[in-house]
Length: 140
Image 1: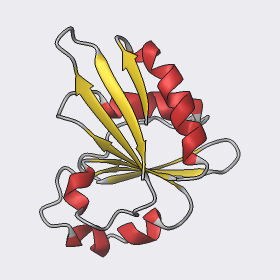
Image 2 (image 1 turned 135 degrees about the vertical axis):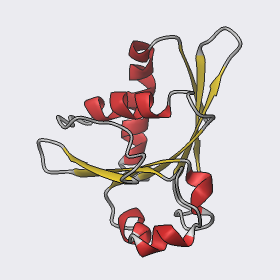
Image 3 (image 1 turned 120 degrees about the vertical axis):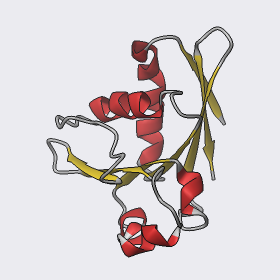
Image 4 (image 1 turned 180 degrees about the vertical axis):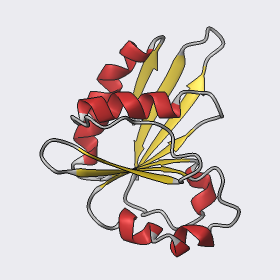
């Protein structure tokens, strides 16, 4: 398990660099944390580290955004908050994305039930009493 603390978005860079390295072997990262804890902000910093030039924002209504870096590597960003049933993920081809070998960043993974790969990285984010963020990576 790895642990980072962040007070500002710039403080997220070391965590983003570490996660980018881990994604080379486990390309699916599941982001857990309360609404407003900074999951999307962290994903924006991570995508900058992955050399994504596209605008990165939460796919709240689209459920999935696709980004591409200068080397043609695809990154898929999911926001599953609006899913009513986990089977909706199957209808949109979620398993095809998760097992494609491409990086998949999944916000609100608890909505996916058991459809996420077992071999993934869980990223847990928590706001601390002083307003800073605790970020933990767990390799499954």
